[in-house]
Amino acid sequence: MKLIYPAIFHTEDNSVWVEFPDLDGCNSFGDNISEALDNAKEALEGYCLVLLEQKKPLPKASAISKMKVSADAFPTLVETDLSTALAKNKSVKKTLTIPAWLNDMATERGINFSQVLQNALFDQMEINKYDNA
Picture (cartoon, rainbow, N blue to C red):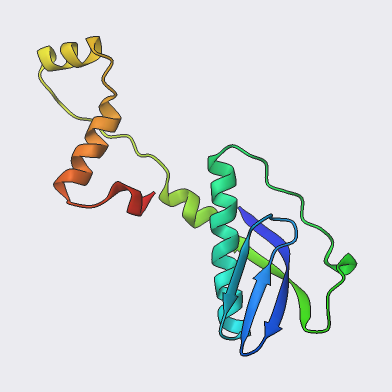
């Protein structure tokens, strides 16, 4: 899913900061324009992924031609492709075997088998599950 939003790049002292007028609170910065653009793409991706995760609609992008900017700023379009990030979070089906009595007990107690397996894998590999969310 490719997304393109207008951004306003502001040059200030020896750095650049970026705002997305359509995305409230989505900002970024860098030491130069190239770094600010890379960081803006990352900020745009993260912001949009959170909206999608929260099942909120993505705002409509404004027309860049209608943007008014100060003398120390310029508007440009920033693009990101959510396909890779969304694919990383895609679930895969696994088949496993457990004793029937254990299955019956867990089912009676409403145990979520997928969640238990995920937690066990994170524990076994000694990684924080939130680092990969």
